[in-house]
Length: 593
Image (cartoon, rainbow, N blue to C red):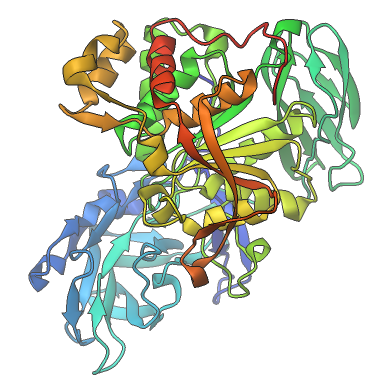
C-alpha cells in the first residue's frame, strides 16, 4: 500500500492570516500533523438536546485531532445537531442553541477554524455568534447571518496573529429576528479542517508555492525496456531545480529527462520543483507495459466504500480481475463520510492481500472530497469551484500518464465529486482530457441524475462531467441493481478466503443488489465485445432547472446511458473472478474499444 503520509491534512484550507492588530488577507495554507488542537483537552458541551427536537451526534464528534489524523470521537457524519429537518421555531439570541469548549486552565490560541452546515441543509438566514470567555467574562469574537455557517468555513488567525488567552469558546446559533424560525440546526466537523483551536507557529503551516510543477502528458504507451522522454517544461516557473522520481527507485534532475523503465508495472512518477524557498510536486501515474498488457483496460476507481455492500464487492472484483487498476479514490456519500470510506478501502485491501492478492496488484490509494459541489451563480458548469484533493490530483495524474490510444476509465460508483473536480482543475490548467479519460458512472434513476442515492449526494458533479465533453457512460442504479445475489441460496459463490468470508458476512439474509460491479463488467464486456451490454441510448443531461433529467437524443453525443445488461453473465464474472477465475484480458489481442 502506497500512501503519502507527510501531511495528514489533505485539503486546502482558506485561512485568514492576520496581522497583530486584526484580520489580514486570505492565503491558502495547510496545517501539519504537529499541530495540537486545544479542543482535544477541553470539556465539550452543548444544549441542543434541551430543545426536544431529536439529536444528531455529540459535541465531541466535531473535533479533529491533526496529531492522530482522526476525530476525537469517530462517527459517520461528524456532527452535532437537532433532528434532520426539525423546526425549532423562532429562537431568540438570549436563549440560543450553542456548542461550547471549556478548559480547566486558560489557554493561548491564535487560530480558530470551524465548518458550517451540510450543503443539503442551507442556513442563509440563520444568525450566529462566536464568543470567547476571559477572566470570567464573555466577549463577542465574531457574529453575522448566514456566511460561513451557511455551508462555508470560518477561519481566524495564523502564525503572525498575537495569541489571545481564553478560558472557553462558545458558538451560538439563533433567529436573525423575531419572525424568522430556524430548522435543521447542526454543527459539522471536517477531516483536517475543523473544529480546531490552536496556537500556530510558522513551522505549523505550509503555504503553497507560487508556481506549479506540471508534467507534460504522454503521447504514446510506455513500454518496459524502451526509453521515454518526460517533460516538465510546462511548469509555471522560469528557473528552479527540477527533480524527478520515477517510482522505480531511480531519480534524475532536469526540466526534460529521458528514462527507461526496466520492469512492467504501475509507477507513480513525480516532478518536484523548488526555487530555494518554495516547492511543488506534480504527478503522473504511468502504466509501464509488457506487450501482453498493451490492450488491457486501465481503470481508476472512485468509491464511497462503506456506503453499501456492493462497494466492497466492486473493489474486490477490480483487485482480482485482470484490469489495470491504477488507483483507488475515497469520496463522501453526502458529506462528511470520506474518512470512514477511506478506512474501509484500506480494510478491504488488507483482506485482499491476505487472500492472495499479489504485491504488483496493490494499487495506489488517494483520499478524496468530503463535501459535494455547489452550482455556481452563473449556472455555467465551468464556473464551478472544485473540491481539490489528492483524489482529484490523482485522476489528473492518470490522464497525464495515459495516451490518446490508451485512455483511462475513471469509475465513480458514488458521488462524482472527485471526477468533476479533476475536470475543473484540468480546465483551469489547460490540460486536455479528451481521449485521455473516459467515465463510467453507476448512479441515477432511470431518467435523471437524482431520485437515487449516488445522484442525490452530488447531482451537480454529474452535470459538470456530462457537459465537459468527456466520453461518459451511465449505468442507472435500477439497471445495475439487476446484478444481485442471495446468500441464502448462492452463498457458495463466495471464495473461501478472508475477503470472501467478509463479503459474505456483511451481506443481508435476502436478495441484495450489487449495483457497482456492473460498471466494471461493462468495461470488460466492451473491451472483449462480450455482449453483456444489451441496449444503449445517447442522452442530453439537464441541470437543476429541469430536475437533472436526461433525455434521449437522436444525435450521437458524448453521454450514453446503458439500459439493458446481461446480469447473469456479470454476476458469474464477479464471483468467478474473486474465486480466482477472471475473464482473460492480458495477452488478448485488441478487437474492440
